[in-house]
Amino acid sequence: MLEWLVAFCVAILVVYVFGLDAFRQKPGCSQLPADGDSVGSACAEVAGGTDEKTRTVALVCKPSALAKYLQKHCRTFGRFSPCDGWTWRASAFLQSAYEACWPCESPVQFVRDNLQLSDDGLVSLDWAVPSYHRRRRTSSHSTSPVLLIIPNSFGKITRNVIKLCESALSHGYLPAVFNRRSHNGTPLTTLKLQQFGDPSDLREAVRYIRYRQPAGRLYVVSESSGSGLLLSYLGECGSSSYVTAAVCLSPVFRCQSWFENGLCWPLQWLLALYQKICLSRYRTALGNVVHTDALFSSCSLRGVEEALFCQSGSTSGNNSGCSATGGWDAYWERNEPLRDVDEVAIPVLSVCAKDDPVRGDTQSSLPMELFETNPHFFLLLTDRGGHCGFSTQSNRRASGALDADGSVAATDTAGSHVTNWSHKVVLEFFRATTDFFNAEERAKQLAARRRGLAGAAAGRAFRYRSVSTCKQMPACSHNIHAIYNWQRSYTR
Image (cartoon, rainbow, N blue to C red; front, top):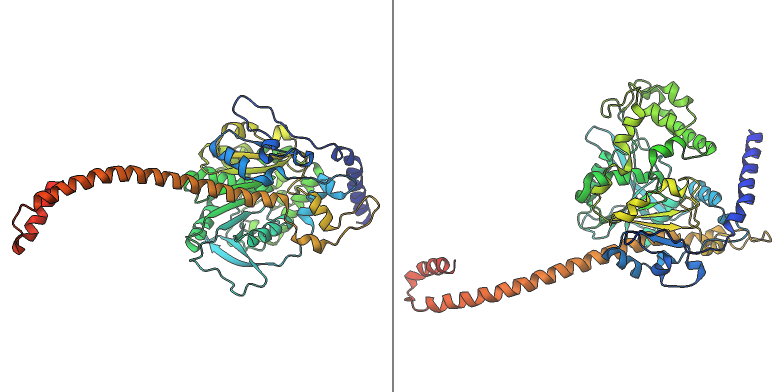
């Protein structure tokens, strides 16, 4: 065991040392190829600044009124200054591992709601509350917006998710983390696991949130591979999603190819091992419907997913139609996140980094044509940032990163109050889209009021003539009802 640990540390050191040259390159503006009017412009137009540290972000989108509004009002989009020099935060791999695995001390506490679904299964919502909050429940009459957070598809609650809850609380949101069946301590009460892109459980959770907080707007953020569930939900529900806006942090779009060969072998092995550890407590129960030998002997993500859902007698046999022959392709026909992407009816922002070690190559893993042609999708592409990392110079100074001489600048507790750049982007995007929709609604109401005033003026003139005619009739008390009926029929 000790030899494996030493080998792992040596591998990390090699990646760190040989990757520094790539991270020490001079930051520049990531200008993506434009095709006429189909591609949005890059960071210089977003931020309106010329400092070279702010020119590492590109906003890719189809030109629209909302896109212009975001470029004008979302200043955080262009204010990303990634770490340089001899610091571990300059490594995409290390900062990604830090955000995914390093424990986080936060004043945020969670109150769990277990939701029983229509098939007697259980999912849970963990509502984030500050530690000093005396009232454990929020009133249903609260107008505070709700921020629903969908973690990665493996159920791991990362440091990034906890920090996002902390930032959302400080800005007046009600954060809630959605946990799938058997994830994060949620009991597995039925012999059914949620497929990668099946939004049925999420749909029932959203209905519960609307029932509990009917007066608050709903926003959704997904992390990493959890974006597959979010995009599937938005595509299937369309304009009935009850969501105002959504953000995908380091999303995985082409999920079938990502499961097949999107990750290097060590990461595949670690994620598959984590999945098998989480499912091991249900090994006896799942043995009746899943080939547990194939499941627990697999060393790849595809092997685990295929053993769970694409073999005869699996947990998805009753509702997915997968079989042992050709089941893998049939499974992804129903679970690919972008299968109904044309039905999405709300703004969706994707925050990605070019050096993401988990998502894979930028050219093959990002559907650029989606952002160039669909007005509801926006891509914020950074030169550096890793996978859900996006460490900045302020994070480095506050979190105690090692300087070139090996000295520690500060303690990690001092950095606990520093908001991650991607979290600032999330909150500012939600604020800007809400303001844009409110301005559009006010403009529509004003136009309708003007049309109504014009029509009402003509109506008042007509009623005045009818009343003057009515004065010629005898004003007897026993004829009041007859006068009213005659006036109403005349005005009609």
